[in-house]
Image (cartoon, rainbow over all chains, first blue to last red; front, top):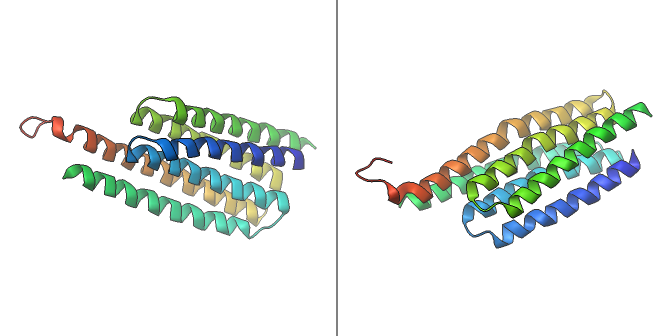
Length: 87
Length: 102
């Protein structure tokens, strides 16, 4: 279990770096928002994996709150892009 | 020992879908096709990885909280993807309409 979780954490960090490429370079604002949304989901999974690996139970609550905040940020920025196009 | 094998298979499947979603986000040429790849990465990868973690952990209150996180991700991420797609569609196609008809 320890080897699989360590490999999964390293692999997930590498995919977060790959998504960061699109978040920095993306031509429009929607591209950056998609990349940030995916990075948020991967961060939630990463926190849960670290919680199971180190047997720290309260990290699960941190992941739940992070999911809430990430959802609200995505909704607000999507509304801003929509208003910007409506002008 | 058996839970290690079954949970490892689930987590490796989830990592495969995360890798495919990331390659799709980097390589696809359009915004809407990138949204398509990102939604696969969010729903199926999260389902497989969190199912593997629940199998590793066994049945207790932490597994219930992980299941709650999974249900929350499944409700919110398609909603956010739909809103981003709608905003991008409005921003791109608003000046193409003639006489108020798209």
